Length: 282
Image (cartoon, rainbow, N blue to C red; front, side, top):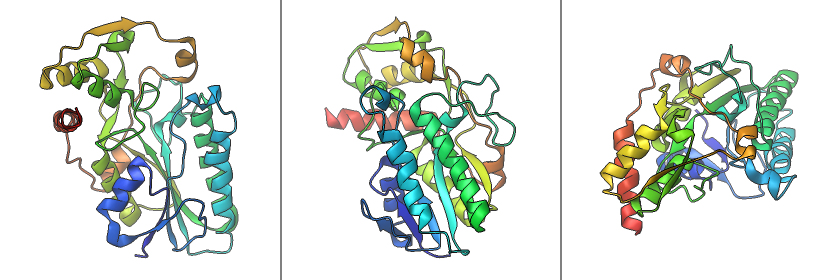
């Protein structure tokens, strides 16, 4: 297989993928949009729905305009496979659980979610038009040490685990009665690599655990494992949160598992790793 031409190698998942498969990738530096292999893995993206408050253009510029710049360089390459990393956020506010690649109707809300879904549709149209193969990977929530952008807005669970380690009070929406699908970053990278090597092209693939984890259960385990003095305080969701966020979400991962994928990290081991990591940071 050709080396993997990785766009977005400095992000959380991209940097981990680069580390795990350093001998198999060609990383594009920032602002370098030249295609250097017939096997592209594209990860350039914003990371949350909150940019609308500060910059109306950034989600469009990052998630769509840069993508089109790269695609424009692929028009005449019939041997190219374009692998695109998307997000479960494209499913949006739908009550159909678990989210299935083929049957769930996407109803994205928020500029990040909408532009990621738009990017998917642009890729499919472009590739069908020019005879190029593609795969789209819809990732669940990805956890792991080294994510420098965790906040209440992005990767809230991991942010709250860090808060618990530091004995700060934890403010939860819906009393923590929220279902989410989580996967460890190493497993997410392995799943992407496996699909690139074995799965058919021209399809969408959910990448996650396929399990509905209860938010409150994970928080309580993190408090226990870290001997935290944090208090759980229930608060009402903001209006904006209700506009752009989905209360419950988890993925149907039957397709991914049919390619032979098995997680190496369960939730208990992920919590242990994160608690230990943030304890060392104190």
